[in-house]
Figure 1 (cartoon, helix red, strand yellow):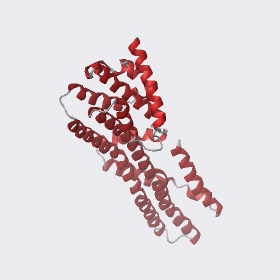
Figure 2 (figure 1 turned 90 degrees about the vertical axis):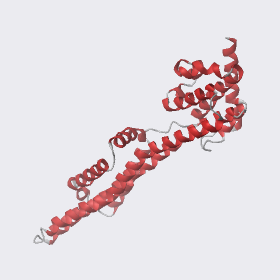
Figure 3 (figure 1 turned 60 degrees about the vertical axis):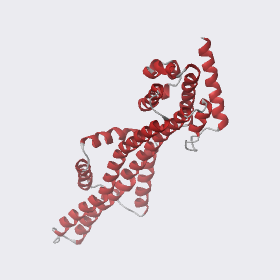
Figure 4 (figure 1 turned 45 degrees about the vertical axis):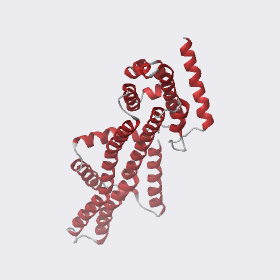
Length: 293
């Protein structure tokens, strides 16, 4: 939604300013210039990326027009889920988590947090490392190194769509110049025409430069920044899980381990100590009710 609002603001400001100085909208309607710039940009995008990068970028584009789902409520659910899993392992042993790890969708614990279960990547990240902890064959340093490698791989993969979009945005001003030069060449070929017609042809040629710069810095390049922000939010969630699980592996109580994870979150979404404590208390009561059943 914010992307669409931004597009409206950019378009309104540019067109509004143009109209304020008495500009004619008809002069900006140059489909040939737009075809040249957009077509060349798409062609450069195809040339500069392999098949995997193109598919990854196309999959990422629809997410740009959705709001962020990484809010305080989601993080509270994540930390409550981690607390319940760690508390169960502390009370009943790590082997008690096997059923929850193998079938998270059928787990009574996971079932209470549908927003977490809906994120396949996060669920796999949690269950994979809990499985390694259950095996007992790896120490905290080895698991931490493996987590860092996986997070780094995720960041590298997430950078591909952002880099591709950034490359497309960077190329558009140059293609705008190409379009303008082609227009000037056409104008010079008609040098025998009246001055009024030559002025119109030159104006049409300049629209190419205008469109290339506007599309690049007003529409395409900002999308790369949004993709990087979304990647950072997802990475932060993985880091929160990493710190929480490693704290538990190092012997800290579940409530303390969850507190360690809380400190890794961005301040805009980080719950306060009191909010987290209350949420954990609710998770504790859920644990006790399940034990009675």
